[in-house]
Length: 504
Image 1: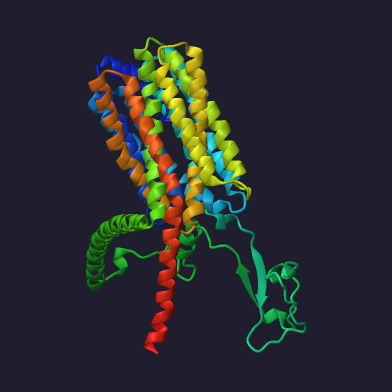
Image 2 (image 1 turned 90 degrees about the vertical axis):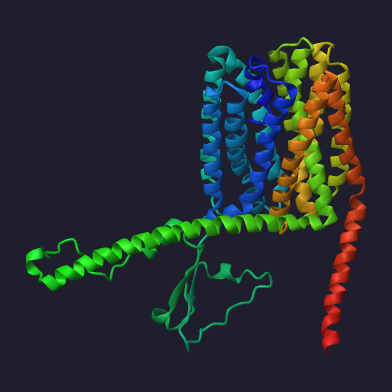
């Protein structure tokens, strides 16, 4: 919601303050940089504190940041509130979605990804005209407060990111005591599903009263474990204690005084321990995040990361420039909102379609991805050439442009799993986001500088289209990268097999 609707939400404020195209590019691209860099730490942070807490905190921070943007009256305040605070919150919340989804689904991962992509693009379609309506009715400040309140509802979705193990069925089985022998032999299952035969709860042990019942269920929730660990039924209760000072002698009173001092020392030690624990958590998260970057040693990972960085940077900066370019060409912001909304509709349809089709064996992720790049490149060039033409053709072209974006965005996450595997997904997803973030502080501001120097939005769009075409060439090089990785894996495997022989 925040990135695609940036131009619609802040165009009026930035126009009133006389912000240049370069400054606008820095505000938007710094926001995207912070967003993508935070995605890099979502995985390690989720392993430490839980993915639900990470997503919930990020959503809350993003909502508050947008609400506070209603008080912004300068470029600097918007930079810190939206670019920094909003980027941190958005990265933590959105970065938790796809890795969590990939763990939830196996056979129908493409279909599940289709629903995720549909939700993202549907938000773009609905929010662009909605924000424009809110600004007309409640001014910029009222619209910012309402948009922040809408984002706050995502906390409900973050609360549902529960571990899969919490919802697995509990299976009870009986373990016979030592020395006991069952009356009947257990039938073996060729599919390894013998547990299902014991669901009736009938014990085959002759000494059933001595059998130990084992609950082969999921681990208890953290909250349950906390309560169990802090319950001590064996300790005597102090609720009805009749101990008074009069019943104690001076030695006992001195012992109590020393005990109080020990309690104070324990509290100070506990505070120091908490500080060390937080510092250790930060160090582990940063260390694991940096270790994830090592995946770029693989040419396949490097190509996918570069493709993601270049395509996402280009299409986000194009959609950011649309309101400003149309306003400079004599069109209204309402017309720009229609262009953004129509592109979101076609974006949604193509995302759902390609994500669903990717589950079939005949579907080629590579060739469909390349076709999406070609459509996006062509539509960008055509739209820049007819910028001063009729609104109908601008809307139609943006619709075609949205098809290209939908194909790319619908397949990019699936391409990570296809070429790197599910085990490397966390590292690949975080590294890809970091590369995208670095690209935002290079490509976006450069496009703004080109616009200020040339005084033409069309030239900036051509620059972004050229970057999109580079990703097409990178896909052409993918077979060579796959072959290289296979040769290297074969060499490493052969070296491992030779080492025992040499040592013998």
